[in-house]
Amino acid sequence: MEKRNYVQDVYEVTRLIPFGRFSTYGSIANYLELGSARMVGWALNKSFTDGNVPAHRVVNRKGELSGRNHFPSPTMMQQLLENEGVEVKNDTIVDFKKHFWDPSLEL
DNA sequence: GGATTGACGTCTG
DNA sequence: GCAGACGCCAATC
Image (cartoon, rainbow, N blue to C red; front, side, top):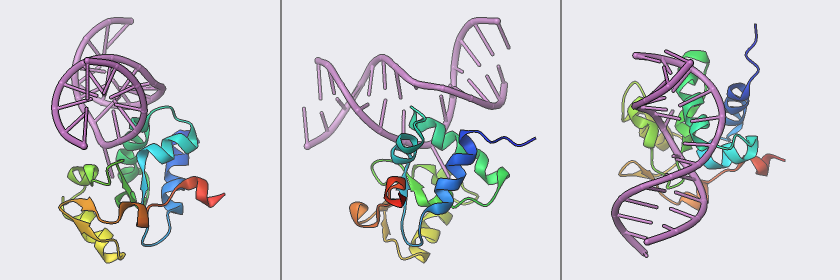
């Protein structure tokens, strides 16, 4: 049976993040009206086992790679972001507002 | 079934 | 402006 819950929505939105951009938990949570940014993080945690979700494109409000610790390698998240052209320094995204992408922009 | 934790965010001091 | 505390909803122990 299909889950078809808010978790799927988080996956969809995360996959919609364009190349070289990134989004934040708060924006996604606000867009999906989850009421809690924690739901996004928790959902993304499962995303590893559920399907291919560019979770490395989702960071916290400060632009820090807070979830890097949950990746197979803590440096993989930064590597992926840099590979996409996103400048990352000290586990934090440079030009936060510049590369920032919001799901509401998709509308 | 109750208590704790979790990839966060916002408010108050 | 920075630091600390609370709130959020769901899953796991």
